[in-house]
Length: 344
Image (cartoon, rainbow, N blue to C red):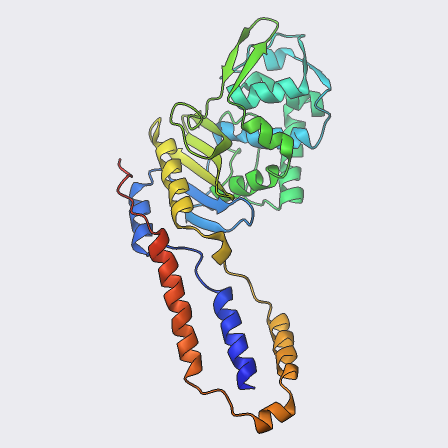
């Protein structure tokens, strides 16, 4: 029985070792740096929340809405289909790729114009082609995120993110939506395109991705994302980055300055890459499975062993615990970095 208990104790210890290799003071340092009203940093593979600040607060997303439009379109239509630009799409306000009424454009090209240059006209053209109207496509978006992803605190009223008081999301929801979308290889490829030659009916140019972590403020491991801004939403940003096989998603909402969302994102991602170890993420233990495993271990201890062999000394358990604790401390010391590089 003592043998079984020892095995169980060690197993549970490994289940609950902290996934961080930094002291609690680092959280305080990070909190002092973050300017955005709502943020979250998650592991893109497991969904584990590494850091968050008011991540469940309902906020206005602005153009990061277009990430949702993209994944909904990718999973609802053939990208080779040709969309005809309507008068409504032609005259939508905000950032555009200067589509002309009656222009015929492949859906794939519209998605790229929307994601790289944040074209609101492309967003409307996509919505109207798939569902006939912006309102119907917004209904599709809401149904999609609820039924396919399990999102409950988000409502979309349009495909582009222009302000509407009833169009809102949370940092947590946007992180989960992005995590889902990353399973689509075409989506991941599209959000990672830095430049694109654009040959339109009335506009020929080179589109340059608006996300500054590609070239303006280059970030090691940058995979892609989307920025956004309307006055009532502030600066919003979704970023996906990967280093040494660890892929993270950072979402920042309502940053106060033009570059604050990027500084916040860099701080979040650096924090995650410096201090988070996915191999130490706690594993939830099902009580029934735990009891079953305990019985299996007990059966492995033969009756004659219990009767004839000397029981393991009680001091062995604290010794093992100390060894494990020292090992965890070693990992923390080895990977700990300070936050002196963060400023303003």
